[in-house]
Amino acid sequence: MRFPRSSGVLLHPTSLPGPWGIGDLGPAAYAFVDFLVAAGQGLWQILPLGPTGYGDSPYQCFSAVAGNPLLVSLDALVGHGLLSAEEVAAAADGQPLSLDQVDYGAVIGFKLPLLRRSYERLWAGAAPEVAAAFEAFKAANAAWLDDYALFMALKDAHGGAAWSGWPPELRARQPEALARARAEHAPAIEVQRYLQFLFFSQWAPLKAYANARGISIIGDAPIFVAYDSADVWANPELFFLDAQGLPTVVAGVPPDYFSATGQRWGNPLYRWERMAADGYAWWVARLRAAFAQVDILRLDHFRGFAAYWEVPATQETAIHGRWVRGPGAALFRRLEQELGSLPIIAEDLGLITPDVHALREQFDLPGMKILQFAFDGDAANPYLPHHHVRNCVVYTGTHDNDTTIGWFTGLSEDQRNIVRAYLGRDGSDIAWELIRAAFMSVADLAVVPFQDILRLGSDARMNTPGLLGANWGWRFRAEALNGDVAGALRFFTALYDRLPTHLRPARGEPPAYNPVES
Image 1 (cartoon, rainbow, N blue to C red):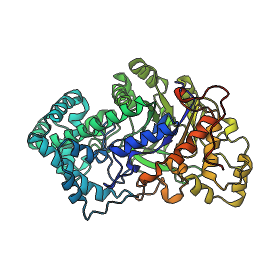
Image 2 (image 1 turned 60 degrees about the vertical axis):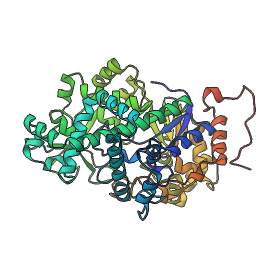
Image 3 (image 1 turned 30 degrees about the vertical axis):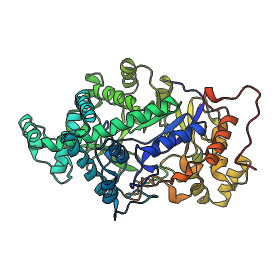
Image 4 (image 1 turned 120 degrees about the vertical axis):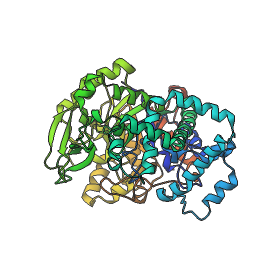
């Protein structure tokens, strides 16, 4: 699917400002949308919105459909009378809730008890209009919500253990055992349903607010799901698992220039032939739910749909794996049949073979170009802007890269000279020099991490792949959303013809004063 020439900002909601230790779907999220509008942007790209577990990674969630309760706005619950401002402030008192970094342990300990307290208020009769909406939500989402709520309630009942550590009858989902569990844990199950209701009842109006102002949301879907998830527990027949429910083969990537042992991700692999037998119903349901949440979807590790690296689960590294053919065009044809035109961005980074290019091009999906990968001294490097094509998305960097300033600082002087020579700039404002290069590219879409717009260094990096802990925590302060920053971004957006149609100046009208350069 082709997209109009436009630009946007990559920022996960956890990074938004606010007093409660983590960004959420409250006032700061709406202020960020207003900033995007003032800056002339048309896109807001986020990371997966699911409930995170160990390591706090949004790419390892307990569900491919559910939302993260930590993103729920407490201010909104105060507005509905389900919490008081005083009790929220009292709960925060003494907690290490940073304005600059998310401490997930502290946020969980602070926020989840308040969310449960709001449920008790609702159950006691507060906010009857919210209670009615909750009942409607449960009925409309039972297909995924019931399994997810039971999974999370059982996980809590077993001290947070992965489902492989539960009693055999629950691991195997024996009907009698599930019926007993639903009765025994009914209150906890209802709380889990309520937490999902809160998330979606706040996300939907935020998305509507953005859409009404010309902002499209780009979401993110990992190709594989976490083993310890409701998806795998509720659908074991769709994954390569043994009789005890443990993976027999897992996902990863083979050894390469960056890693002599490859990467063993550990996600269970799909039984694609079984998925094909029912018309890829699980994938259809997953993407239908995703497109209800976002307008455009980035499919992570797109190359895995053509062929994926299968690693025996007994192996500690990814060295002894093999390439296995993926579902290919059959899956995407089925998705088109069920969902219509697919507004998908294919994450086609890394070792990409001709079959991957062919699959992406068959369905007219834009790929990705990362400018930080471009400057190796080879004029034929496909990430250099003079090799870009229209049907792609250009980024200065992604959530897995260092910030542009951090990246540039880490280069050798010879490497920095290559960057300077190509850009025709001295590198003194490298973040905005790379933003300029992205915006002037022929790529239909240009997306920039907010850290680069703010000219931040490595301490603002969102994720360092392979590093467990100390990731996903960066936040910014509210004063960053100011007119000077918005004006500078809007200038480049207009200069390189990326303004939304309704904001474009009349033909021949000169650009406004450039606030980046005096």
